[in-house]
Amino acid sequence: MEARTHLQLGSVLYHHTRNGEQARGHLEKAWLISQQIPQFEDVKFEAASLLSELYCQENSVDTAKPLLRKAIQISQQTPYWHCRLLFQLAQLHTLEKDLVSACDLLGVGAEYARVVGSEYTRALFLLSKGMVKSVKPCLKQLQQCIQTISTLHDDEILPSNPADLFHWLPKEHMCVLVYLVTVMHSMQAGYLEKAQKYTDKALMQLEKLKMLDCSPILSSFQVILLEHIIMCRLVTGHKATALQEISQVCQLCQQSPRLFSNHAAQLHTLLGLYCISVNCMDNAEAQFTTALRLTTHQELWAFIVTNLASVYIREGNRHQELYSLLERINPDHNFPVSSHCLRAAAFYIRGLFSFFQGRYNEAKRFLRETLKMSNAEDLNRLTACSLVLLGHIFYVLGNHRESNNMVVPAMQLASKIPDMSVQLWSSALLRDLNKACGNAMDAHEAAQMHQNFSQQLLQDHIEACSLPEHNLITEGTEARRERPPARIRCQHARVLSRSAACVRRLNLSWQEEGGGIPVCDTTASPVLCFVQNGTQVQRLS
Image (tube, rainbow, N blue to C red; front, side):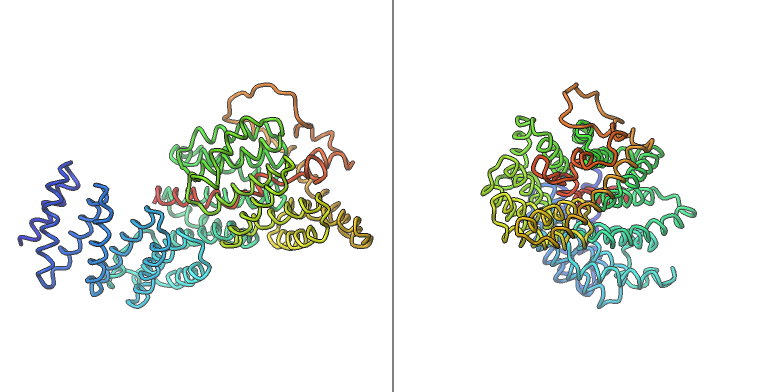
């Protein structure tokens, strides 16, 4: 009774007062006494859980961790508490950016849940692990696990097993969330057809659920999925479809103040990415600036700044603003976030800027760093972009053999993704490389590919700019100062007719200004929703 009384007093003081010292004293006594009493698990482990939370609030993380480890060690015969304490310690490691330790603990939890026969809780561990790090085996296990859960009737997943007492989401919502995590990983790795496949599955499931369930998290899932597929469309050369889906996100957010509040910054960021894809750089700058004003999320902030830097690189006359941005996302010194993807993208942006400045050795250093990081995490789009830009540098330097060694794998990877801009860029390089080497047939084949990609992108560009939704690019942004246009504006699409000149004006030919380089959406778009919308899921659930 004494241990339980201390626990109850400590719990009340912890949750309902600011008297942390007294709460800590009662919880420490409850933990100490309960360890000496057999079969007193509920008091023992609840005291350990609350006490570790309190230690963390008091910035005594080094005290909380050994407490949780001991509680985990002695709780193996109590499935509910063993799983809960594993989650708690994994979360603590995640907050400290110790993702290796967090993944190890979540892996232990997933295996423990499998052994005790709790597929639902195993899915939670695997899902949490999937949100921490891109792990292919984990994702496959998660998909298999959710398939098992989907076949169970509701009475089969009622908590008769103590390890099944975690009921975070209904199994139908869990299925959609697993689809969403799969889409995130597929986008980040550059498997856009797979992302499309699972987006379609998830949206179909959501439509069925929304007929019977008005849970707000379903609308959040829908918006997140659309955000992902929009970026896929921009990469694969379907800007018109992407624009219509941006409009759909706008309509969904207008129906819910909470959705709009949580996704306004992402929406402006998507509009900024679209603006770049149709060469409306002033509008892109305005959308990104608005997004920066609306977000407090560090990863999204870094992503937006990276893309804004790419706009300034493309414009060519914004050196002061550009240097200021590059200093804030310097991947060599005090990079503002822990995201591996964003840091790799920052190296790419630096390499791109050095290329435009003619500092080729410096550009090669940055791009090789990008390649090293992107290969380590299977960031295939960044790999393709880095390879083709390195190929371009070697071409400019007259090293045709090394250029070919970079451009051929870039084209193969871009075709697999598929990334239309990188394919366009690679085909132009291959055409000129083969011309320079006297390979007339290969040059002709590459020229034909380049022409086909150019026509597809041009047609899509004109279609997108002709849609009424194109007016969204001016929505929600402050009036921009007047500047002489650096190039033909996308609103003049009617003059972009059938000639090769129109392709150059759209930056679809690599020769103009260093190559019509697919700067922004090619660089970082696989990252955006993965980091930000994982946060949104947690917030709304």
